[in-house]
Image (cartoon, rainbow, N blue to C red):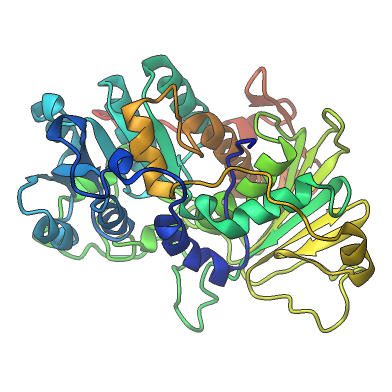
Amino acid sequence: MKKIQCKNGLSRRDFLKASTVAATAFTIVPGHVLGLNGATPPSERVRIAGIGIGGQGAHDLGQFRNLPVDVVGLCDVDWARGAGSFNAFPKAKKYKDYRKMLDEMDKEIDAVIVATPDHTHAPASIDAMRRGKHVYCEKPLTHTMYEARWMAEEARKHGVATQMGNQGQASEDTYRLCEMIQAGAIGKVKELHVWTDRPSNGLFGEYWPQGVNRPEGSPPVPESLDWDLWLGVAPERPYHPAYHPFVWRGWWDFGTGALGDIGCHFYAPIFRALGLTGHYPKTVHAVSTRVNEETFPLGSVVEWQFESYGNNPPLKMVWYDGGLRPFRPDLVPEGAAMSENGRLIVGEEGVILDSAIYDEKRRKEVGEIPKTLERSPGHYAEFVLACKDPKKQPARMNFDEAGPLAQVVLMGNVALRVGLREELTRIRLHWDQEQFKFTNSEEANLHVHKKYRDGWTL
């Protein structure tokens, strides 16, 4: 069967279930290969170290522990935050500085898991890859467009196994969506709309704050936290609980906002189904609520325009956050649910809302869509198998795939920067991938990458 690297992008509820589905939906991979029967000899087990082991990092470690993996090192700048992982893996050596861990444990580590705030993803991952370590890095892979390309280049240069943490990419729902699109269920795709209720609207406090300025004051740094290490490559600023833990995502210096948080999840299956990976938009444009220098806006709409490629027509890709949503297409009947998080794929012959064709006549014309794609052994199992032989069996969403996807997603954040708001009322940003720059805005090019703080330059 044909292999394809597919990823979840359905409703938020579907996505939240996807990591569980991906972790348990093993197919025809012998137990002795994955080590699930406990018989894998030590020489064939993958020795993993975690960088950023609270929150999502703790979840990742918990998923890997059921595979032929030994967790040998654990690093977190906040030992109170990392306490759960320290307790779960008492034999692992403990560190606060990942650079020290990589120096001292160089010969004891085969692979690392990077689950730090976004601004530290690339520095930690590239440092590890340059030492020959395999890298599993959480989404959205990097903090800047430049880092996304850089990560892919470093992975190829050092021949290591890589994977971005799009856990739902291994789910059955994702594969069925890819098969539906590739079977021509709605004809050639011409528009893609994705929306989310993130960030918090301020009423329920479900996610993280945006649209706010830097907090005043400088509370004492918790004893468990090394604030300088937490800042890493970011510019210096006083500690404040407004940044740590997790609430960092809405701050420009540390996170990538709602688009970075969710965009890679929702867009990945379409990129694969359409063969869009490696193709880049010619223009990007954004509108939003009020923007400031510190945090992302409360709500935004971003539009990318791709030119036609191969046998595919031009593609318009649109993102909505903060509770904004697209208008309902005529082919979607009134009364159909338009949830707080969703995806609408518009083809020349029909539409898919989340994961269903919403035109009954078209559904009958298409009929039953066969399963044509080889299923995943499980998201985390893919990475372990890749560590054993990166060339023979690369993981789905490896950095050759994740890098281009992350670059496109993060391009949308460039269009949201405060210095561009007045300019973008008059123009669309034009991108040249070969030159790796915007051709009509030097202001935009200032945000393609960032300056690393002294002492952290790679």
